[in-house]
View 1: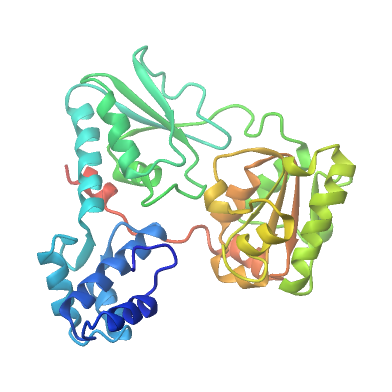
View 2: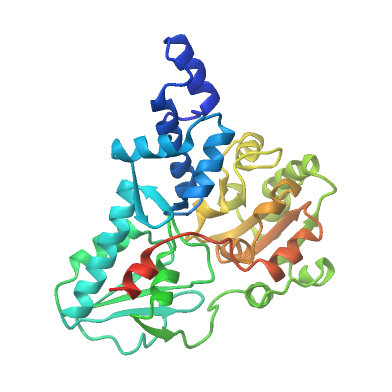
Length: 359
């Protein structure tokens, strides 16, 4: 039940009670331990501290959290890859296999290079050899890195291009971990950082990258490439988005409404992705789910309920998806510039950097 769509401990407990399963059945605690690690993986973490899991299990009325974690390990769902750390067995194995594939390339005479910078790879990428394999790495997770590296033959080069300032893809933080490991070569991007992007939008991206967000009056550009639409509360946000998508943006830029992308930090809430999908009659996704795609016009919806999820990386990732125009509909108030200035990224727990650095 926990693995089913919409599954929750409350629903699983109700189903178990109907089936005559006792609330103190030890399998309940083990299943909840695995469920907590699955939730952590959805938030980008590849492992969780054991004390945190014990506390969470206690809050879910598991009377012996240590025994629950032990049983989860005995059943093969959970492993302890490091002292005080617990991880899903499959996820821990994937990280280790990815590290082994990268190390294989390094010890057989090849190189692994990270070409980092905004809007694409570095032009020279540290002069990669003719037999180099170059891939975009912004959205790679450990499984994708493992599979890509496995396709590269001994002695050949692998070039991973991307922007470490953007939201990592999936679980973990592959590009950042590779940079932190100290075992890969790094080449900085050269040339114009935002080719083909209107100057007001390029300036906004650069400001956010530097941890700055100009006041709303300075953000809105004369050519309407950047527009900020304040809303007094979340319930007013949806109406403003509907107007922008259905009327204002198509009229100003000649863009069909279905070519205007709408993104928001959260799926739930009065102005989350689900509520906006219902109001617009078409799919609206979270910033994380849309990262890596580009659109002529983008509406970034930042309701007040998303204030706790805001970060510089999230805002920058959303802005990177706009080619001609971005409208920011916000009811978060001062939480937005504060997050851009003070929260570069939401921390993720991962092991890849340590595995690579430790050989």
